[in-house]
Length: 420
Image (cartoon, rainbow, N blue to C red; front, side, top):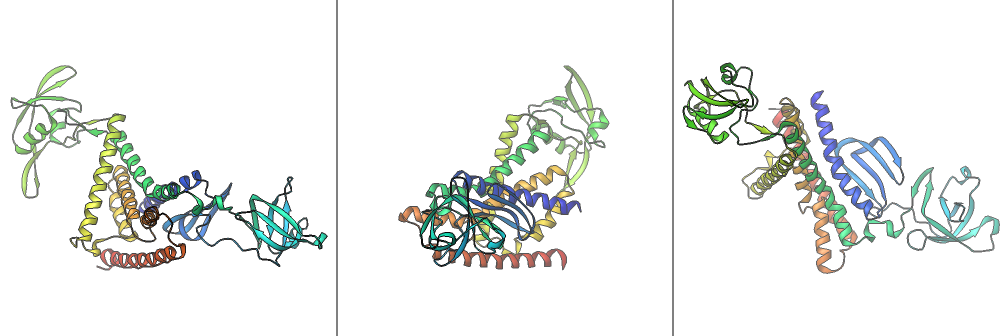
């Protein structure tokens, strides 16, 4: 159950931050965002606020922000249709009832002659109460269509994604992966604030209860001046001497509370990769500083970004087999292992996964954010957008191939972890 909860929390955070990036930059550009969804498939929970419906869906395989103009979404109001109209105090149409008009007895029934709910925002028609006169009705920019009792807000052309500048559209798509890097950075900074940032000072960090250091009388915070008469200038010097002297007595000259003190310590023997080394049960010293934490967060984000790019390079060059890739099943199993090591390891794992998600989405693969960004680059170079139907077909094929890859990876995970 702990693993399930950890997996759901991590997955939810990764998807939320990713989609929030798309959402916030689309909203800033003035795009009508109809839905902000975590998960896919049937709705489990929904809540509407202002123009957006926030949903949680059944299948934990992603999320999306449904932006106006991205999908065929509006019913075309053709000449001859009979619709009901409701107005506000300014005599602008706020609701266009397409069917079941009897449920709106106060609506004005009109036979449509012409309607444009995207650019002109007008509807021309013959009202039942004045059938001989062609009337022109002004439509409110936030009017809704009502079909089968369900309201759908209209999307004037200036509220649609495609009407925005190339820069605005680029940022709305790029912001998703960008926020995954931001999340990873935040997680690494929080870890550094809570755990501290390792330093190279010759100062003892936390001691293990059963270590030789504690048994000899050393304490956390002791500053090591010398070992066996050798002057110590860094923590690296301390580690090197201890590792080279298993089961040998070492004379530590330390400073505690401003006073020097001699303490004899015998490192225990430990075998690592077939080599005998000495250990005394002391963690490296750490510094809890906001400035150091921010620097550490940036350093860890950069390190894991380069590591993941390196693995991608090996995949492209054939040094890394596709069978080694993991999907949701593999991530779940890995999360189970990491969860056993504690909350800090789990937070670090979430940060690594977030960077991985950000990088994967930036790859120029159709149906992914990187694929869409690639089309924006082509648009910038040629000075005009690519035909939307052709672009849509490319993304559809890309999505189908991604789903096929997901099935293959998931099956490999099942064989690797449950059928071996």
